[in-house]
Amino acid sequence: MSNGRVDTPPSPKYHLIMITTLTIPQDILESARITPSELKTEMAVYLYVSGRLSIGKARELAGMSLWQFRQLLASRQIPPHFDESDLNADIDTLKGLGRL
Image (cartoon, rainbow, N blue to C red; front, side, top):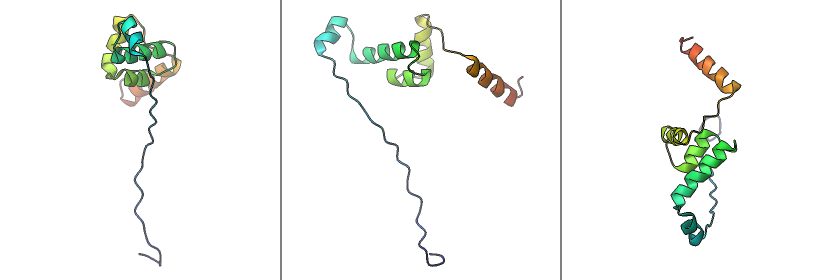
């Protein structure tokens, strides 16, 4: 206590994570010959290719490491998204590291 006030410790930070459940009938999965895990991977690839998800979020949806997801994309001959802002960020990083 200082100057008549009670000092309270900072409150812990909580992150709210919302989860949505998507119900796919088993006969649909069987007809497609796909497991729920494979379906998540296919959704992740599709959303990445269509520009709806970043590579980081897509790999998260697929439940893969970044390296694994990049390997999957490469095996399907899907090029990485790389635009001018990515190039400029890489150049800035290289300059910061003294490599450019």
